Amino acid sequence: MSILQRAFLLFLCLFVAHVGQIVSAQETLSPGSVNLEYSRVYIFVDKSGVVGHQHAVVGKLKSGQLYSPRDERGTLVFDMKSFDADGLPARKYIGLEGETDEGTRKKVNENMLGPEILSVEMYPEAKLDKATLKSTGQMSKRQLPEYILEGDFTLHRTTKHIRIKCEVEQKDGWHHVRGAFKILQSDYGIKPFSKMMGAVGVKDELLIIGDLWVVPAS
Image 1 (cartoon, one colour):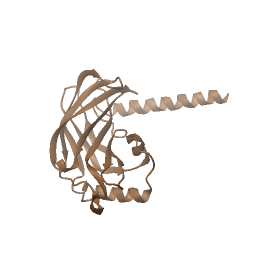
Image 2: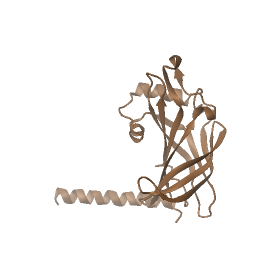
Image 3: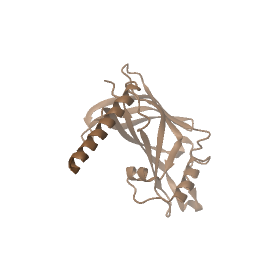
Image 4: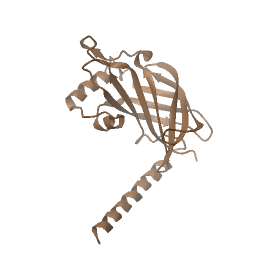
């Protein structure tokens, strides 16, 4: 057997295994359920100070039901303790160059998760409740079907209604739902990190990006 034939056989085996994992995962989830293993939320944190740094944060979901065949409203629950700053995959996803050393990452995460900012021991979850996902009938810039995801977003026990423009792509048997929205930390009772009289710090505004894999309703 030639090298090319062996490579093709290996590819075929991996493809069959991948499809098997997709089918197996969907069999355990109901239509509209979010795949928690692959779905993520990303946050871009811009710097405000002269010598500050931009940060990329990634977090997981605890549970998620985006829609159902009966048109019931969905709920997404975010695991705030899972949020991690400046890992290389997150930085690449956001589009930030360079890597962050582990010592710096540790300090950033301690500040972010600690009582002065996210306070994850007191507020271990954030939630998008009464969520609906409706088609706009238009196409996104990437020529994918455009939707509006809206609901009541709760962070630090403060709730605000949000609307998120999303695109939904049929991929590998899933609905790949991606969308972004902005919030002000101060609107949710969070004081943006700052030290050295503002020379080092982050902006109040955060860009939050959802990247969800959802079981199709059909």
